Length: 419
Image (tube, rainbow, N blue to C red; front, top):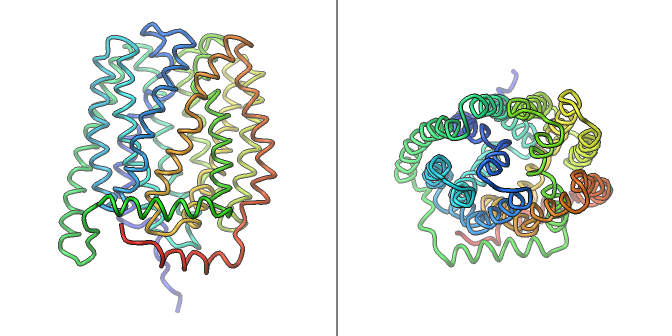
């Protein structure tokens, strides 16, 4: 008799993903066009870079808190809190009279991402086994990529034909609808928790301190978690030099329209959707470092194509490589963190990683803008290529679990206090 294997995506995970898809279609409508919206409100290139540097401060205040509350209160409760902040952010985007006002929207949006993101990643880990985790992350992220296929072209069309504010009205309405669903799910989850003995208890400062101390021990131990921090920090700094400047480069230098820029983001997401499930399988079969090294190589190739492109077709080829690279990196990276960090620290860990990386890369957008103005528009885009080539051999050597890791993680789990 054949054993009935459980599905890779459980029913609770499918419900969680459904709300994530609705909310993030709204977010992707303006993500690639935000630098152009800031410019349309009177900002120059340097001020755009400064905006994203200042905007990166807000997540630092919320990400660890969001991840820890996710561990303490529950995934749905944290998502509900963040979603309310996200709705407030869309209101600011719609009514902002100058680009400086948009910093308030960035702050509320950062709170939304800080509460929702760690909850989503931790929830996937809880709904999978170590043997299937890469595939579950790959399948979940692949389905999630529909937001990048639909959102950017819709946002590009609305902003080009009706205006940026009208685009934010449409996106805000969709996000509000998703928030209403999330609030109902949080209420149901709270009632279910109250009816069982599996109560998480009330969050406390002592619980936060214990979680952070335990996580700090892993980071400073010199093992895989330490090298994840080093590699992620290097990657984030160098790629943030160029990330927010890409739409400005394509619009101001290559004369692409808003709709074309939106379609490029869609091409990247569609490519990622196509290859992310194989990327998860590759992570499970051959180890996370294979996907990470292969993905970084593809990102470097894509950035090289970006630098020599002057037409939409050339940029489309670059975005195809970006999507392919991210499809290999994302499931491997998430699986690596979820395996290296004990269960009770996952939400806090995802929030901590995002916070520490944001702190390290804080000045990167402004520095990238200064490089553009002083050395030419292409200057910021050479740095990520060099960084990827340097990081690949480091990841190949360091991102491999020793056989003793399973025992070590079991001991660590037992030592982690309740939050």
